[in-house]
Image (tube, rainbow, N blue to C red; front, side, top):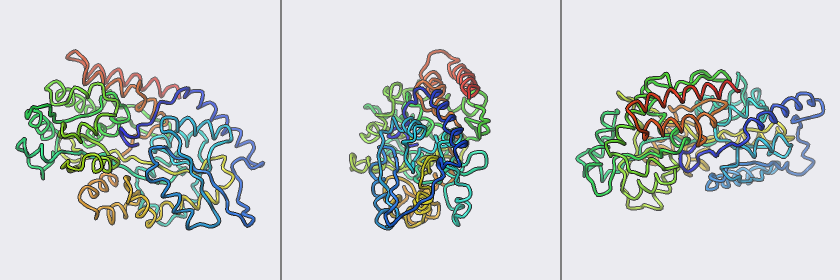
Length: 443
């Protein structure tokens, strides 16, 4: 997941897709003797050609990764196809179910539990156990690729949510640019003081109509304060948005800043397209985003002076949403041995350093992220630590619960922050809780 620039699209006809994928899993189990998804490679003097799908918003670096592999592997060749981000999830599920899916799939890690539970991904457990550096890979990514004790994916590319802040606006507001907010009180104070500068400047912006953006940027405020959004996992998820007091407190803080005029008017309708331009244009003192924003800010707003900091908890501490992709082999691939060569190569330290760490993503090898990547500068060090210690929402129904524009999460935020009435926050969290319970009860 990558906030505004890569918010997963809607997933229409999800129930029908789930039934199709369940049928695929059953057919594969019955046809195992005939080789459904169990083929081995007979190279016959020619390279095994693998197909790989990735999201279109990964175009800036995914081609470099694949070309790097192809240059160093004569017996295996990967053909990359970039799928429009908004269509990726459905296209992958339908493609595998229909036998036309890829051998390799780079998947937004929030969707991996669903695909793992639906028979779309090959079980890699025995192969993963042979990796000597599994403990050096992003823990959040590894957990997302694990379903009911089996391994279905490996970490591939990383991101992490952090707090971007304008150092010039901090100084003008009498704040120390070298001392970013360490708790909610300091965060809210900074937002109000920057807003008091006037002339169309505001303390904090968030995309109020973007569910995926706010999983990436609002949930760390909750987690850093000891709260949670979802309890349990592996098919036994239980929502906590209506029962955890830190969710209520985080929404109340946002609502207070909105009603005090510390957020720009655009926040109420922003679906994720305005955050970076408002911050880059110097109109917003703080906003939360990921590593992908760095290259755009440097390219489009070269005069902007900013730093990044951890997203703070209510009384201190910090947290982050660990985003990015896992890489998996699909269940109907006839070239699993060759595909595993790509996965094993992709998590090597030199590959993560050269092809991932030099792009607008964070290496999923923590030894690389906390080492060479962090040495690029203070901003990169903050991102690396955020990824290494971050968390991810884990649910088979992540899209329906959080990302979709009509999800209970999206609706809750809109009602709680911008809605009328003194009881807006409490009412919004209770309604969201009930709606999430209903979604999960349908499987």
